[in-house]
Image 1 (cartoon, rainbow, N blue to C red):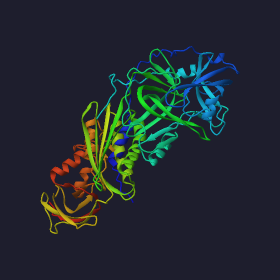
Image 2 (cartoon, rainbow, N blue to C red):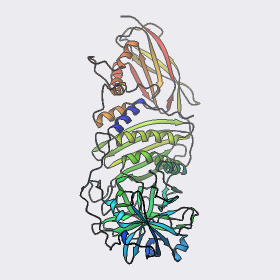
Image 3 (cartoon, helix red, strand yellow):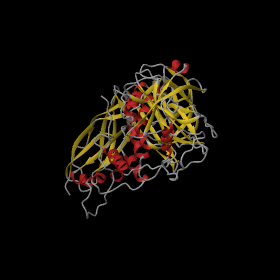
Image 4 (cartoon, one colour):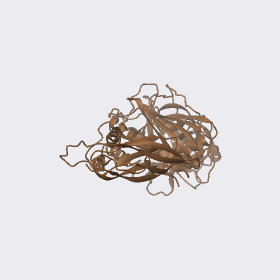
Length: 590
């Protein structure tokens, strides 16, 4: 049984962040001119059954090749895109690939030398020689939306799922997108991301994309070449490969001929891709591609296509992991980037980190870990750090990553200040051994005490399968105490007081600094907490009624006050502290 602890304060702060609608990327100009491809176009109303043309794509390396297409029919739909062109493909290349392959989405189709559209859809478990083309005028609608362009210098930052549309009248029609490929992560992380995003995820062992991707500042893209949209890259990679359809004189482009993950205005890196081969499959053959260089930014992810601009680069979240394996003495360093989309980050980051820890530690299961999380970036100059200890007898990676993900979620979605660019750095000291410290016994004075009197509490602490040790703490009887009081000794996070002042609406968090102060004041799992409680003292923890002269305090203020008055003591150990014990003592009446 694992022993994760969820503090009530985190729930309050998460609710604060989510209710405030924290993230809003800088908006670009709303007056977007119509996209004009560099090649002439053929409107869908001019297309007739029997017309012949050719499609461009890449099936190996970066060489653009062509294959014949024949128009079968033009199909109206009830959704966007409003029309789809049914085509039949043929030729030696198609025979070799087994038909239209996933990853050919975006492959431009030319009829009489004019661009008609791009392959977007096909059918699974078929002969794969029939496909649906999204007309170019429909694809261009993807760029008829305001961008949320990042306000960044020309040089990119480099710090140290929705269901697919149903096309009316067809069953089993599928976007011809190559499966998203993940590497540098464990198989279970890939499976979890697949469920979260509703997209096929192919997991590759090791890391096939390389630690860093070079940037092409003046890239010139060609219709038909393979491109990838990146969600993560570096020591962890998560990307999908498709085909570029068209470019314009202003550097804008269209690709895929269907949505990527259907998130509207986005800021995701676009990369050139190297196609290793087309992999045969009864369901649908697919391209296996690897991103090789970043060339621009995807700004629109719409039902008709993805679109963006070259020579402009997306902001990123920089992540690093230092893993120190106590058992082997090894130290491993990993680094990767993810797209700057705070809401998407909170969905996939926990799994990416879990998969990275699995791969780096080279095992799964029980263990103890000390985790330091450091967040920095942008206007967040000095950064913020928190260290905690975790133990699980089932899955230590999941336990530690869950806590880190909660903290990242609160900070990245905070309603007060955008942290852009954002750096998240995790230092992990981990062992398979159970470094658990059990609170075994406590001793308090037997004689009556007076208000304001100091006294000793002796705590017996028992490390896992080691000799017990004793530690003494000095407490002070609080003002107003009378009769029986209790001394409580507990592990940090066990019966931790909640943020009642926030929950009951007496106070609000009003700044990022105040938010971080409350998170920092949360107890950690390596703490031994010793405190004295009395009925009169406990009343101070209850938010006052309207008109009460007492200040309405947050937990950070209450804890500080208790520490200063000697009512609470805390000791941080090198163990995960478990257990809770109570003892009663008598206080003389005033």
